[in-house]
Image 1 (cartoon, rainbow, N blue to C red):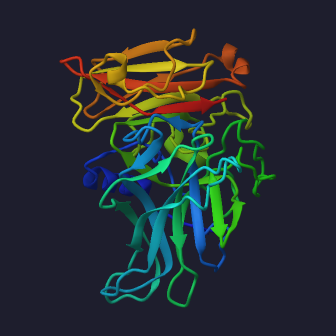
Image 2: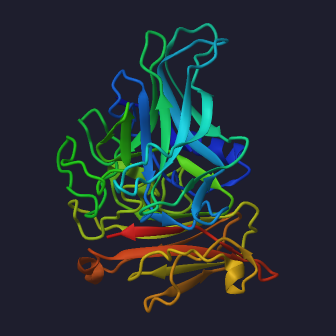
Image 3: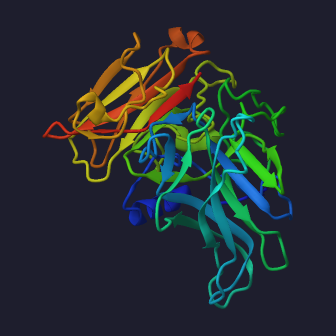
Length: 398
């Protein structure tokens, strides 16, 4: 694991300029903590981030019973990047469903190839081989699907070669703890990803409840200390992500208001505070709020967007398409409108071009009641012809 200083603002701008599809938003207001080979050491193997089925639903719904990915954004780093015109060192990408017999881990016998021969970074001509990073968007010739199994987790895996005298590839990550004082960017999650972190060092024990990072060497799987890769997934649908709004100086992208280069919505969509906010000072001094960000390419400013939220029921397992509910449009329903706590909020005149968001702030008097609650959110765009577009669903676990 190594520190890195690549600006996420640059990476986010690259996504906006190159991608003609909607990313779900997992990298929204994210920041790079380090670059890592997970538990691989110098061995060949795979480093993964788990998209937990309890964190997100209603995405990649091209074929019922599957999750389908059209593009992938991430940042690759090489400590021994070659000099142009030599081609960068290469790696592959795979997608896995969850192992029904081993919840929270991938079914390594059911992996699907997403891309092969992806090139890493290079050094400008005239330089010498050394450290370089590159933000990548990888789009295969056809979308890639995996079945929804077990709890519906999906694993995005980077298949890295062994470290050699001319190659040392890794993928940049966001950390949920501070490994040592040399690391200054990290995001401490709330009580659903215990333990709290009060000093540098890996939070232990490491379990599927407190990390989204997995490594595979040979046939041996291992968990990595609290993290997710700084990545995003595009699909045939709109963007939609839950955000954790924090006061952390170590993760300024999560602050409200967002610092320059972030936003416009406040909060981070990573898999630490993004899905596990700290609403009642699990970490000293914290009192997080939450938000939901909706993104749809081509949506005019001033559009009507509804935001639905429930706090007592899980996502709808059967995810009915909107046309099956008598509505004209795209996407599926994954929050439960029959939940007695269901609320529907509308944003109209303040909608931005392509984007709208809804912030939920908690009065001091209710914060002690938050632990144990899960707040599920989903957004719905409606155009002038009463056609709808439903976002993915995201959960904030308190």
